Image (tube, rainbow, N blue to C red):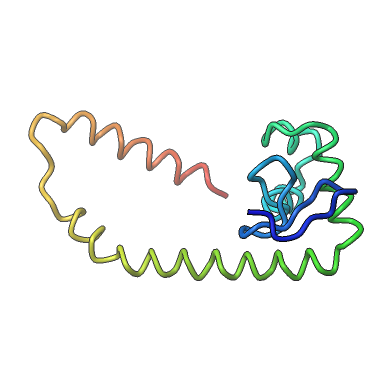
Length: 125
């Protein structure tokens, strides 16, 4: 459902927000990667975009930086609120699962999992 369009840039406003025309990829998705210092070519490849689509997104972000940054901050806030909601909602459920006894015969698998968790924890800075 297209609510508004900017035909010159290839960016449209949908119910998800500013979106690259012909895709379901929002400008905010692209901004996540830009903020993480990804180069445009890698972002293009990550989302399977054409050169025209990634250039339209980057041009739109640059030309409308104040508006896009404000909307991006709203999106980040909404994401955090949703994450917190689900984390709280599932806290008891995950605690219950953690106390359940393990199935017999899977000791080797659990040992391997614990080993991988320890390795992953030691790799973090």
